[in-house]
Amino acid sequence: MKSRYILALDPSGNFKEGKGITGWCLLDTQTKKIAKFGYISAEMYKNQQAYWDAHVNLLDGLSGYAPDLVIEDYLLYGNRADNQINSRLETPQLIGVIKYECYKRGIVFTMQTAVSVKTRWADDILVKKGYLRKHKRSYYIGDVLVSDHIKDALRHAVHHATFRKGN
Image (spheres, rainbow, N blue to C red):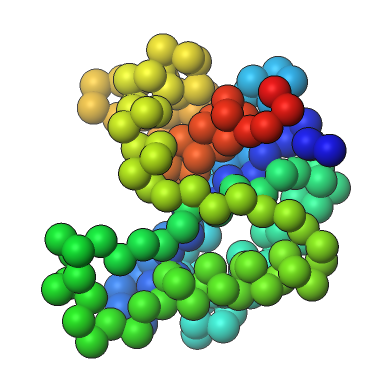
């Protein structure tokens, strides 16, 4: 049974290889409004495991909503493979932590590629649908300036809400 809420994550596991930022968005599918949103920044944590644990804590904090979970998948595209030479591939490790936590809790999740949502839900479309507000060159949810990471999580939530089975 599908939930009223969708929690979408745009994970960045980078801790040692640049301080990553995971964007997240909780979408209420009945009102078509953003219930909550935010980010988890690696810069706020002393070590990689504490950063990963913050993602588990997010699942804990939003468990009362019993949301459907959508996670942006990590794919190594050929045109970017050279950039990942000698990389520890921290983002796929973080996704593994999240997937394992979902397994332990019995949480069903959906993986979506970035390419499947990026152009379909461009910023201008999210503005037109009322999810974002644009002022000059910046985007806002309400009066809060949002990062690309939060916008990407929003794209995944909207995509899942639009195309999930049973709509």
